Length: 317
Image 1: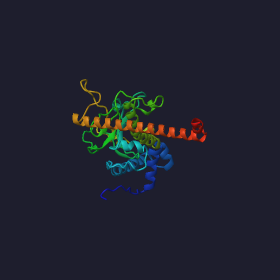
Image 2: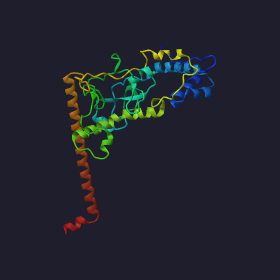
Image 3: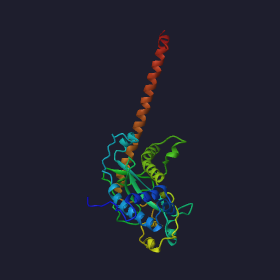
Image 4: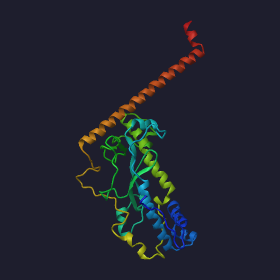
C-alpha cells in the first residue's frame, strides 16, 4: 500500500472515540463545549485528536477523489440518459462554491462575502454524472501549480458562462436564458435557448452535488463559533501565519483585461464553437422528430376513434 491511513490508540482515547468526536464536529457542526460534555475530555484533547483525524482524512481523500477515466458509457442507466447521448464528450461538470471560513481578524477583508459580510473560501470542484467528486481544490486561483485534470482532446467539462469556451470546457451561449428557473415560466423559443436548457440540465449535477454535500455537512454552510478559552496560543499559531490552508481566492483584474480571461488558441475556441453548433442541430432534429412522431400517433388515434364510432361508414354513404 505505501500509505498509512490508520489511527493509533492513545493512552486514554480509543480510535473509535477519536472518529466519533471528529464526525460529530463535521457532521453535526457541534461546538467544542458539546463535545467536551459528551466525551468528558478537555478542549486541548479534542483539538489535538480532531486534527489528527483530519490529517489522516486529507491523505485518504487524495486516493478517493481522483480524476475520471474520461470514458463514460452513455448506455448505463443514469440521470438524463438521452441528453448524455447527445453530449457524448461530456465527462462531468465543474463549478465553484463558497464555504464558510473563520480567519484572523486582520485577514478578514480578503475573505468577505457579499451581502452578510461573512468570510468565505472559494472552492472549485468537478464531479461526474454519478454525483461523485473527481477533483476538489481550494487554491485554484492562488496556486498556478495545481495539478488540474485536463480532459483528453475529444472530451470536455460542462461549465457555466463564467468560464471560457475553449477546448475541454463547454460553456453555454452568452446573453441567452440559461438557468433552469428561467424556463419554468416560458418555454424554449430559439435554438440557442434549446441548447442552454439542455446544457443546464446536465450541468445541474454539480449544483445537486454541492447541495447534498452541504446538507449532510452543515459546517460548510456555517462553522459553529467556539471560544479560545482553555486553549493555549500554540494551537493557533500555525493558522496565524501567511501560508495558511485557507488562502485568498480574489484575483486582481487589470482595467484593460476582460472580465473572463480567454485562454487557449483561436483554433481551440473554433473547435468547441463548431461542436456546440453541431449539438444544437442534433437537439433540433430530435425535437422535430418527436413532433412528427406525436403528430403521426395522434392521427392514428383519431383514425381509430373514427372507425370505432362508425364515422368512416357514415362518410362513405
